[in-house]
Image (cartoon, rainbow, N blue to C red; front, side):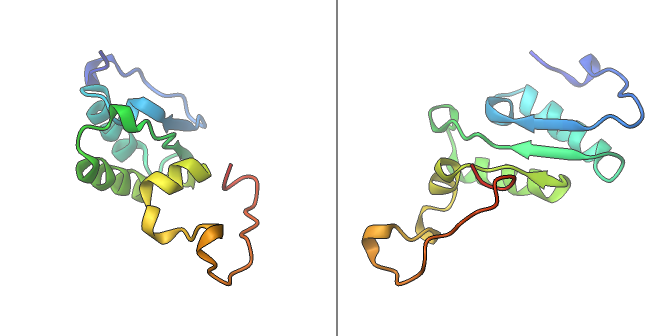
Amino acid sequence: MLLPEHLLRIPDGAALHFGSFSLALEPGASTLAGLARRESRRRLLSLDPNVRPGLVTDRDAYLRRLEGWVSLVDLVKVSKADLAWLIPTRLPRPSQGSGCPPVRPSPEALS
């Protein structure tokens, strides 16, 4: 169980990475959100939501929280599977015949 009092001083120049189930499970999620708010714009912050739908009990609350995280970090790594869960209505499926060429994401942005 990660609580704010467990957080150590972070060395100057260190980057922080957040992700996966730590974003969904309390009290760690709130503790890490507080850390991200505190360190945002002070150092490089990265985020990989690596969504675990089985751990998300309230999808809307999770999406609101994730939106807040995204506003704090400098780099977001997201997989196609994450995007399909996060914004399923915004991603055309090849079978839908969208007429759009397939997206060729840059490797550092989409996996």
